Amino acid sequence: MAMDSTTSGTPTIQYHNITDQPVTAIVAVPVSTYQRNQRHCFGNSIPGEFPLSANPSIVLHVLTTCNLDPQDLAKLEATCSFFRQPASFPPDYELSMSELAALDMCQKRAIFKPMTPEERQDLKQRCGGSWKLVLRFLLAGEACCRREKPQAIAGPGHSIAVTSNGVVYSFGSNSSGQLGHGTTEEEWRPRLIRSLQGIRIIQAAAGPGRTMLISDAGEVYAFGKDSFGEVEYGGQGTKTVATPQLVESLKNIFVVQAAIGNFFTAVLSREGRVYTFSWGNDGRLGHQAEPNDVEPHPLLGALENIPVVQIAAGYCYLLALACQPSGMSVYSVGCGLGGKLGHGSRTDEKYPRLIEQFQLLNLQPMVVAAGAWHAAVVGRDGRVCTWGWGRYGCLGHGNEECESVPKVVDALSKVKAVHVATGDYTTFVVSDDGDVYSFGCGESASLGHNAAAADDGQVNRHPNVLSPELVTLVEGGEGASSADQPHQLRILECSHLCSHRIREAVCIRCRRQGAARHGTCQQPN
Image (cartoon, rainbow, N blue to C red; front, side, top):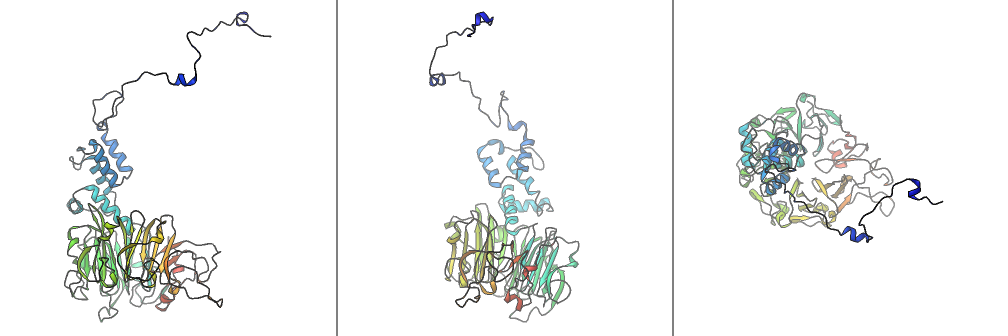
């Protein structure tokens, strides 16, 4: 039964002037437009406007807590006048908002905190006159040197482990007292250096029979051979120091990194200045010195007024990663044999010289590594470059040829690298997803690859690897099946691998020298 609105008592709804029309026509009906008010950083308090100038403290808090990159702060200055205007905040009322944010973030860095106002201003001028450039300098140093983070450093025969709390363990060969335990007895397991109690270590360097440690106060402790240069072929350094001793000649220099090369030692100051010991008797490092010289000499030449964030030492040469207003760059100095200085020749360089090839490759260097006769760099974009003597395939270019200028490792084109480490003739690359690639000399299974089977079915000696291969070491050590579950690895500062779960992975070459079982080097608490 149909119900009529009239009979049901429901009032009739009247529709006026609505004609049937397609949906498209309804959508196309023009609507009233409203005046849009343009937002400005500085405005006239028009309703709906949020002038940043009315809340500068909030803006500064946001910039600081977000930990913006120095480049982002520079872009803010370039796109908005508010960030270029004086912020009128202490400690410097003339600083712009972006400069003040950069200064606040600098003050959070452990190395920057203890600096006096005069030292801070000196660093600012050295970096180019901007707190944004100082921040970039500090961040670059933290990224490439792992400051304030756990580290594992392997030298030729002994290893050093530094925990996040600054506690130091050592193990391996100890013929010169380089383990720092007060004896010359070998240690096959990590042992705490008890004499450093109360001293927080942030950096370590291990060389032939020698160890150097850097504290968070910028002090340098050395033990092992008493010479600052390698003395394998000379008569110096016969005296041994079996416990960490403060290097008196560096008391007035706040040191943040040390590098032990063959025949010389280099240290890097908080302000980015490089000092060297020994190996200067021929002026090869820009100064004259005796082989057993214990006084630091500033590295003269191009880097005198350019801040350096990382140094790396190899066989008679030194690499320096410099931070300039135009970007990051690499300088080299020393012996040029094998093309390891990267200048397209094999001639020596008495003073630091810029490696120009990186500009041609459009690559911003972020990490440098120096092997005995070859070197490597990781760029901001994740590319890896190697150069020098390519013996055993340590350059990763698929051959054993020398490269006198940096060359991109094409086999890693699909890998974004974040770190690189070099040994005598080996190279390790760590990707952003934690994978490890290695190439070079395969002696003693030092590359972390499974042994190849010979024709007679016996396990063959580990061959040299000419191109990067993924490290797939598995529990059980040499000869373990690739079907076993892979374990995690820690890459050391030379050709060794440190595993959390492998127990008998001992480098044969190091075993002859009394080196430790790197597989037992578990991360101390």
